[in-house]
Length: 550
Image 1 (cartoon, rainbow, N blue to C red):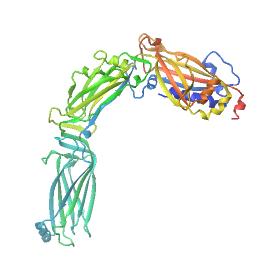
Image 2 (image 1 turned 60 degrees about the vertical axis):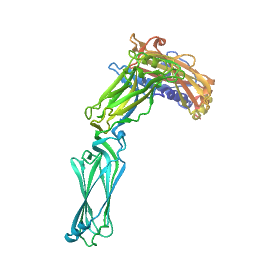
Image 3 (image 1 turned 180 degrees about the horizontal axis):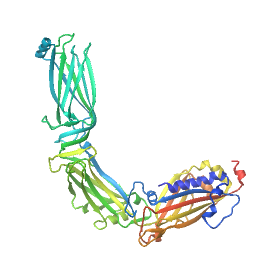
Image 4 (image 1 turned 90 degrees about the vertical axis):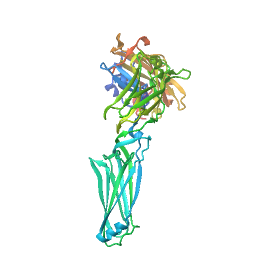
């Protein structure tokens, strides 16, 4: 709802020109004079509704901030939360499995195997080999098991034996539902070389890397069977060329020892949009800052806060927050089991830190520089599932208890008045009538500036300090307990009408001050609302039959 004011006013002002050509039936459905008791008589005139909107507290707050999270307690009291993930890394960030890794092998018959083939008409030859996964990640790791989320295995081979047979491929440590991978692929010779190419999806397959073959290594076995046909007798030059490739591998689960290594973390900041570049004042009674570390990976982590400070406008001294931590470095245990988490949390309030003056004196950024390492205590059993991660989250919590003093919300909108400009000369003057019913603890001024295509101001309305919105009745605890109705008339004379239709942009500024001229704290609740009704009456230079000819 950030653009409520701008869109509503833009629509309203465009209608000033467009709607004068409409019939007077609007009076039948919208009694303009009911909005107030006093009656202005213009002839000829047209009156019609422009805006009817009800904004709740969350929508009103959103007009000054676009990155917010709202939290409500049992009484619907509102807390605004700025949250920034300082860093988050998963097991697939630690280890990148090969996107394309190939094992090339050749199978030939030796002299004894050729003799057996010629005497018995059949022969088997076996090649036992293996592959070491080319993990991109920390050295010193020894994974025990990997479950693949996705990826594929391609087995392609070419036989220039002039006989048929098959190639039996087994990978004992690659299992699906507990069954080791084993497949037989036919070699059907007719003439020329025989080419075979097979893709096997690996999603759900489990690979055991703790098998005695070496770190992150698994065996692959090939058995070639040839049966004598009509072709020439094989020689030692004949062969089966095998290309065995693993593509686009991604882990769904891994365990073993992940190694001891540092994580790559970029410095960053938490921006407080609500406090940025605002000429007014907004004060929070009980702001808080929370630093949370969550670990769902089964590996111990060391986290150090190298820098943590608040920054404001140029000339403001940065405020160091890191010194408030009990230690610049802390250890968070690994998750005790898959699906569990380990937590560390530091909570800064006005009782144990300087967070209150930081938030209330114009500091609009909190900078951080964090370092982390895995397995700082050395080798241990580790595990992680696909979405498990270690993450550090910074939060600024702003419970909406406090006050605002001429806190300003500004927006700019483009207005295509060229579509209605032909009607402008037929309007003598206009009256904008604004009716507000506020169950909200603020008084609101509205300032509207007209600007040309070069953003040069040409005129303005509502710059004389009249309140469009008046605060609801607020009790001693700062809660709004009843609504207040306010009516305002804004006259648009000939000069304003000309400026209006000559403008291409509107600068809209809402100046908000809380109850009793910001002399006490108020509280915002989810049920707080502002109801706005806007109607327009225009006095025409000619009667409607003339206007209808346009």
